Image 1 (cartoon, rainbow, N blue to C red):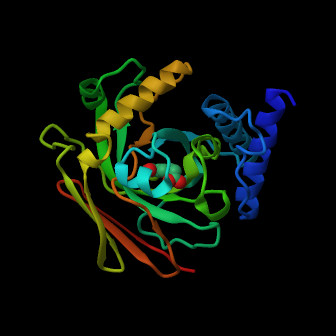
Image 2 (cartoon, rainbow, N blue to C red; image 1 turned 90 degrees about the vertical axis):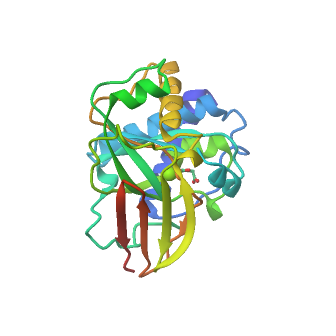
Length: 262
Ligand code: OOG
Ligand code: MG
């Protein structure tokens, strides 16, 4: 089979798995040609299908596996990136139904928005000076793969397990905030599940952003002004059960809380 057929077949299977809320087998054994590079091509094709068929648009980008906690949890020791779409955003004040998910998990993140386009090569200080504002955030991830298990090319193809995201209030002035040392407390139903600091994310969340921007540049892509970038979970992710309430509080960034139903 030629590579464009592989890309098309994998993207179709991933699209259907999400639409039908059905977990599927990973692809690396079935398509030995699926390496990281081809996997990003699948991701791009999958995003194209979603934009056309779901009439949605690109809203930003996400990083994944940028913390040791997440890399250990998933057994994948390299970061990756994916795309956020308009229809993935949920409101922090609306209860969230678990109906659309296969086996969703939730994780705390710091979100960035930039005042101008940023193209690689870019440094950490350049990312910070281009930042318009940051927000505390939750990401809901939902792997399309059986038992939430995958290799790096599989999870890249699956748009980095993207499913939904929830943003807190904006912090416009980050000059007096050191994102590296801010602490976060992640709670489920009032109980502390995990804590983290900005430094958990590749030493500094802006370093994760710079890493992605530089990777995007290799593919001729960039982050546009106004797009949202999720810099990756600070802690491990937790499985969401019906009626769970999750909150995350960050020093100096405020908090986000989300309530799930059935
Ligand atoms: C891959 C996505 C990881 C993060 O923030 O680490 C991610 C996964 O764990 O399913 O979004
Ligand atoms: Mg994440």
